[in-house]
Image 1 (cartoon, rainbow, N blue to C red):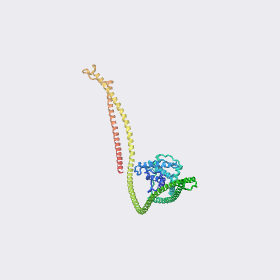
Image 2: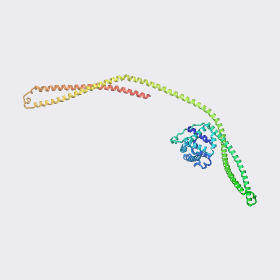
Image 3: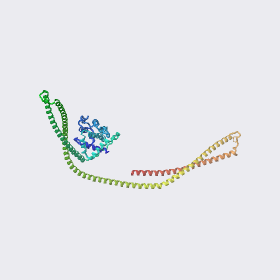
Length: 504
């Protein structure tokens, strides 16, 4: 099946074959329902007699929706009243709300398909079939596919969410639009001329038929009058009694039947004459529309010539302006390229300079790094050694302190014993004139040993303290030197990073 846009164009071309007074280009012009109702009145004016709810609908979609619902209901009922009924391949319930509110092309096509089926199944179907044959070949193919799908297809309900997606209409060249309008005006002119000629022939035939019927009626009236006179004469006894009265009565009844038949035919002829008069009036209106279309065509032709001359001048000016704009754009593009190249050159120089500086810094760092790593390793080893020595000296100092405390306790105990010995009554020191005897033996030796040991401990303690101080001094100075060197290196790196950031 052809695309929705192609189907729309074919249906619009068929709609423009009606005498609408204007050309329908999009389905949006059909969303209010007034043009569709006008076409329905042209299809069957005896059925579509009433008016739509909103003759001049507002821009709001609700009023348009009311018109479309009324049109859809009448059209569906009209198709179902025809002998073939509703085709199985058409969707009888298009979403009219989408047509009124969002101008849905797909749903509008469903409504126009119903309108096409209604025209083909109307009493004037032959006229519309002949009109279809005057359309373009692609349009005839698409309409033929629509008929075949309506007759042989089987309608299936489709999800409403897919109805919202529509194809965008392609832009149309104004000259093509003008040519299309001219072609449609000429086709409408030829169609109306043919219709006028056909209707004139029908009117002439009906006038001849009316004249013949009038003559027959006059003859029958005269025969009826003579027959009535003869019947009166026979009833009064003045007529020829030799005739058969029953035969006369039978002939009189036959004449009355013939008169009744002729009167019925006369009434039928009168109705046909009235219908033809209505048709003539409709043709007169269409002729007026055609004259208006002819005037519009002449105006459009004059306007087309003027627009063609203006278009030629505008095209030359546009070409010159386009060439000037192209040169200007090319010039500006070249300027921008020069600026970009200059900027890239500056950035390249700056990047190269920065790269060289960074290479120098990296080389300095490469030279300094092994020395720093060696110093750091030596300091770590020295630190471990000092920590080990410190721990050993601390243990020795702790042991010396404990030994000194024990010695002090022993000295105190010995002094108590000495004082006790000196203060006893039998002690030689308490007797007058007695000399203090020299202490001999174990106690004296113990005192001397204690004094010697105490002096040794004191000297050893002092040596340990000096050794600890000496060990602490170099380690601290070494750590301080390393800290100073590392701080200077770190500061230099920070300064270089700051300079690089500012340079960038």
